[in-house]
Image (cartoon, rainbow, N blue to C red; front, side, top):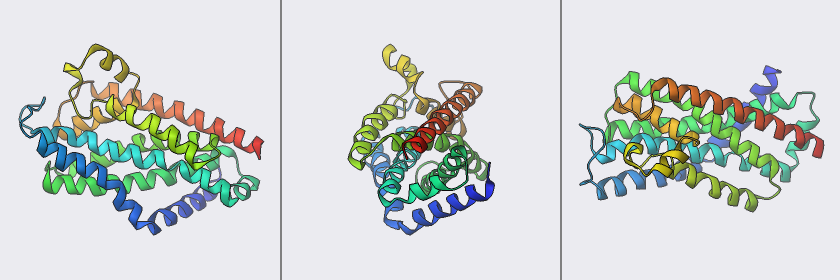
Length: 251
């Protein structure tokens, strides 16, 4: 691993993300609509977790939704780098594809973590009060979640030749991942086929981990969530490095 190269790639991605301030705000619009429109619109719905409102119950799921959409959209920048020929220059550099992939993954994680922090602050002020330890734990939990989803986005981006194609694949993946995760409902009372699909959905374990931190209760155990996320992180890393290796051969 060339850590200087990783730092250089991460710095470039951070500058690009911070320059696009409108992107930071636009990503938060859909989650805030879910929270304040759907949350208040279903205010009469009973929360599966005693002592919390329905709006508070779905907040951890909406937080993961931000991470999901921010992280997977990052793969679009790989397609953009191909068009700008920036990727050719990086591929010609004397660094391994694993180094390039890790630098890109950390760049995508940075954006997701910034969005997570913003929504956690909004939630702590207006929806679900959190103590400093819970906020810190939420940010720590966002690390493996954002890494896993960023890897998925990069893998897709490495195989796509057009932004339109990436958008279609992304839409096909993100909404099923989100809706089958139990972000908006309790998996305990869901239909058997939904529970079966949720076991294969990495977002299910992400939402559950956030619920354990924020609400003190989840569908799975803490160790099940952490173990599943670890396996998904390893699997997506292997897929991503393989996709970047093939990208090198194509160039």
